[in-house]
Length: 86
Image 1 (cartoon, rainbow, N blue to C red):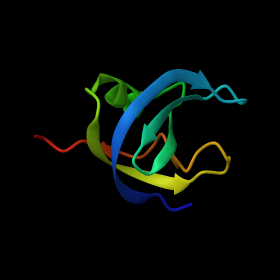
Image 2: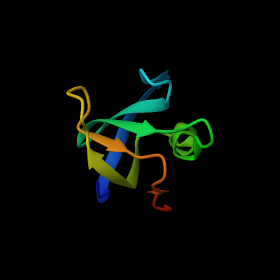
Image 3: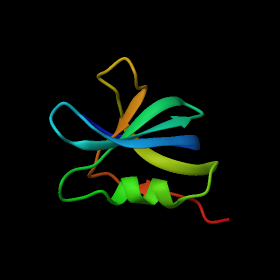
Image 4: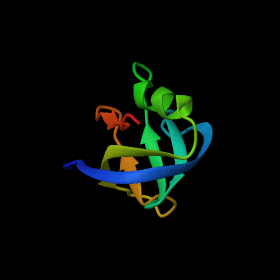
């Protein structure tokens, strides 16, 4: 599935969670709705980037439509996040 860039503002960041498969992810409330930022055992780069930012902050995230009703989008682990410099 193609990941498309979305400009959004992250309003709140939840706790690190694990999927049923054991994959780490971070839920965030954004101006587009609730998203899940996915990680893996080998990379939590995107998760760490989001956790280190002061709220609220703007970002461009490459997203895919979520396959679960609790999220609007998923941010796959292999995509890049861009946080504009002030």
